[in-house]
Image (tube, rainbow, N blue to C red; front, side):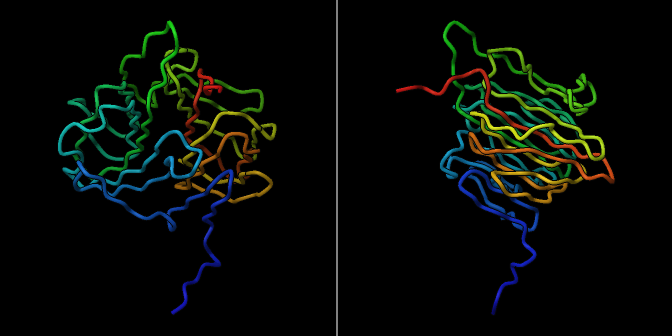
Length: 245
């Protein structure tokens, strides 16, 4: 029996990979129940220094206790109601949990959650950040030079944080204004609309639900489709220099 692959948009390249909903495969993690874990990016890429996961939780699903105390965490409820460390998070609510605390998460309803974890990188003379909670609807929007609305979920100008989470909203037909090449890596999740992503010489049609991992120095740019706005959630490491030998 043959498998039809001509319609698959999933790609794995040296400097990036593209995962689409039909390509995702559910995993399980110890310490979790009632949860399908889609591993979007992990250090197994060979370059990623963070883990990014899409969680699909049954009602009542989640951790069986507190897990992963050795990591810092970012949690965003994409859909449904969850409880994180005793705090109710509805759709569009998010949290930063500092290293050393771990997370205890349960769903009050069927839910989809974006979860990022990484080892915190300390900076000399700067105290580690405290935990925080927020909502997407309460964030300030900033208009970039190319006409893109940008919202920062974590304090982008606070050097205590070693990564940022940004929500980028593109009007129909808008683009980034350049092909970027930089040292920072990205995890990008399309939350709305569609467009074309340029990745290291390749152009890919992308739409809501797609995920892109971009390694350091991967040439990258995006143009939204002309028939509607497009939006994505963007992880980026910041404020730290890779240790030089």
